[in-house]
Image 1: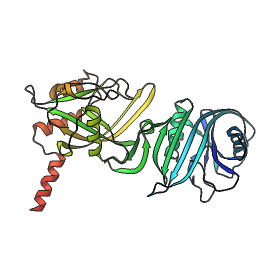
Image 2: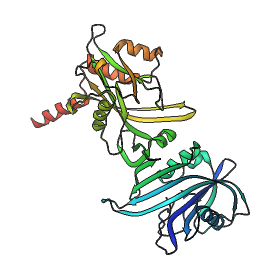
Image 3: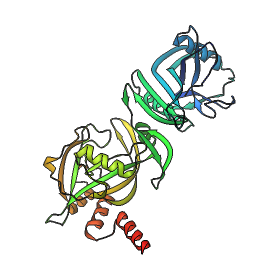
Image 4: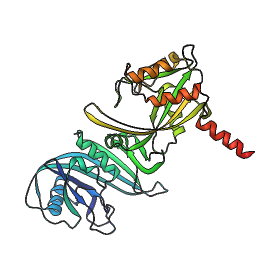
Length: 370
């Protein structure tokens, strides 16, 4: 996020540059200025364009002023639109267009900077610095060598509220603690999975009675285009919680979007929360997943052949006996990304008569009223 200013002779266009050397970026730790919107944050080098300057002229001047270097090779990577709104209202307080560059060629000797402290930081360590959440999105795009992009970042106060990449909304999650409680930090989906940031998901299992073991579950086969575990068998319906969602809201939305089932809240049995951490590589990119999932059981009659499947998420569905499914997951005899603990939760709720979380809370409330 760039610095706000009301000085004359400054436009709403800025430049920001990340200079590269030996697999590191030159970063600035903003510790000097008082009343700095970037106070204690780490950013690149750059600033506001003077009247009459082109983006490249602004880039070269700002880098020279802040670092002492003269750039000899640079690349225009994207246009970032920043919008800041006042908290508790939709009034726009500030807006700017930032031209984002990387540079891999420069001459000259470094000089002291009156904006902050300059330091070379390994690219793999940059995301561990104190960065704006929106900055982490364009760092991810830079690291993935994304072609020239347009990224809009809207903040409410200091909290990221919206991210739009090339005109398309990006998914934002609320970071959560291990017990599922929101921390108040909003994180973009790709950043969450690249850093392993904890977030919430809703898992809905559809089950019905059968004559074999007494219970069978509906499995979905994930779309071949999914960013993780493509083509694997999975939970009947599942999805991430968007920022602001409760677990129940997320569950009702996902079962509707993925399968076309318009369930009521009271039809979902809450089996409890489950934390899971997993790591993998998909499409050549590391994928670090840290979820706290609310597991639900849905037992209303469902005809698999009449479901309206969301093609981008679900390739197909099939019924499978619960015991056989547990065996297949343990042995890995079918491609799957199912946590065996969830099947055990279903088994307990279905066969053992164990009270679910909702049932236990309702019973406790009834007892308290007496």
